[in-house]
Length: 285
View 1 (cartoon, rainbow, N blue to C red):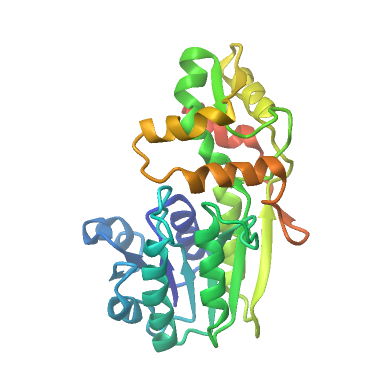
View 2 (tube, helix red, strand yellow; view 1 turned 60 degrees about the vertical axis):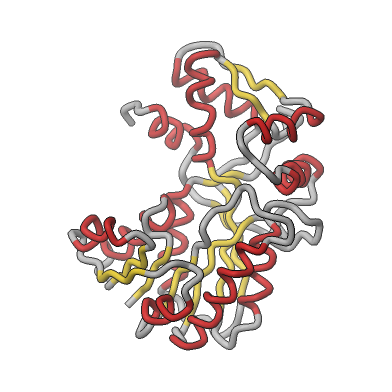
């Protein structure tokens, strides 16, 4: 039995489908019980647990051969990251209680960085999970290609994509969520005897200019990347409703300055950027 958290998201959902297609039993760990019918209809067992409820998580993980952990996204964490610390306290207690043979944790490129930034949440998670007596695979994925969903309207309507990744011709490691899920499905069926780090990016690195050019080809119109001045970031993010924009700004600094990077040699997925963009734009394959 494979227990999967974050199953209603892109990676978790594709992972569950990949395992089910391979004939593997899956327990979908949901925070919202109303979403259970979507997964029972596919043949999943269901467990309901919030990520800060150690007792419920322990029940959700009980009897699982391996557990896939994806923490809830938080793009506006409070100083000191209290939210992720609360999740980690419950998660580690639940994993010790359930004692699966293996855990696969979806981490991120740059999780090893010591400079505080938005991805520090995953750095803290790797530290906490590394203390477990259970082998943990830290799957560090590149920037999601699906983040381009935030650029679809601007590209389509204005022919511009605002870019915080700079300079606009600098390629950045990116990967499709489908490739993350396929690798996670293989890793879930492994039986490692120690902690390990596995890093993943797509078939080629992508610059903002590359992203704009791909949009232009698919939309058959001119699209350009427009770098947003660094001095404008914090005010822009606050105007969008963020209360603590500094970690996000520092994460972007890390990509631009090069200290958010892979620690080892990454594996490569197969899905090209245009395949993801076609899906985001609702175009036929």
